[in-house]
Amino acid sequence: MSAASEQGGEQGKIVVGVDGSPHSARALAWALAEARLRRYTLRVVYAFPALVSYLGTTAHEYYPQVERDAAEVFERALADMPEHSDVEVERALVAGNPAGELVEESRRASLLVVGSRGLGGFRGMLLGSVSMHCVNHAHCPVVVVRDKA
Image 1 (cartoon, rainbow, N blue to C red):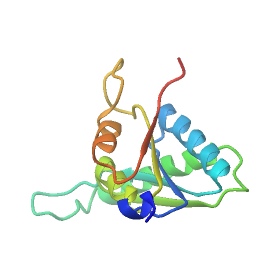
Image 2 (cartoon, one colour):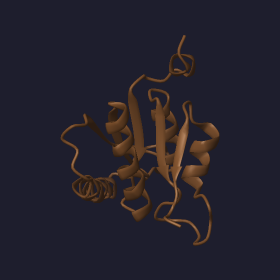
Image 3 (cartoon, rainbow, N blue to C red):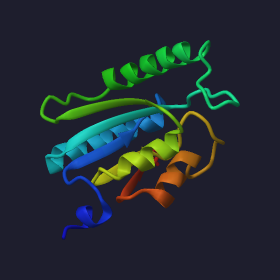
Image 4 (cartoon, helix red, strand yellow):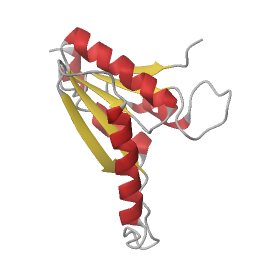
């Protein structure tokens, strides 16, 4: 049994999380190069926080705009991606907690790639909360792409 099968991963798929930050752009470029090298499928995931009311339903008056804004950021990130005609690329725009969604995506991946920090967080931190959560909870190996030294 392969390591990917034991962990529940899908052989031949790299998942990368993006959020529109320079950190995630570097993670996307790294993941694309790795997918090309391994001849794997690249799954680009942008998970955006969904607004939920106390009753557990999506905040109807705000959600459509949040979703449109997320789609714009996601499309910009994909447009800035290096040339990739030789790599199969899947796209996923999902509403939910970014850390939780990426961990869930890792169930069907050979490798999960994230940037060291995203749009939030404190300057000078080595890892952001999403990357730290992924490192601790993913179901496959995780690569954290750091800033250039």
